[in-house]
Image (tube, rainbow, N blue to C red; front, side, top):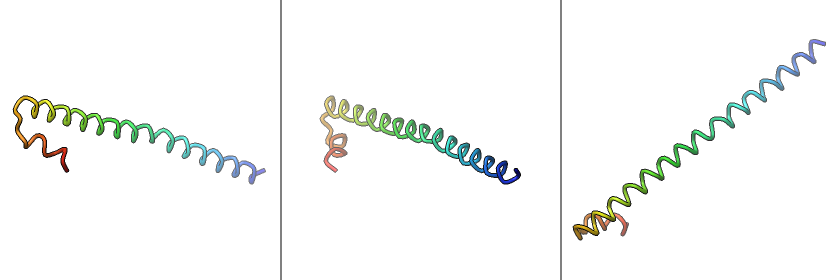
Length: 64
């Protein structure tokens, strides 16, 4: 009887840890989306700046 209770406790603990791990992943995905969005905005700004000024300093970022 004690063994059955211990086994169920282990199963519940594993299930809880798995749930926590799965719920932590969306935060990582959101962080990556945020990083991509920031990069996109910077790129968009540099393209507009180059188009207006024709300053090669804005364009050189894309040549790397």
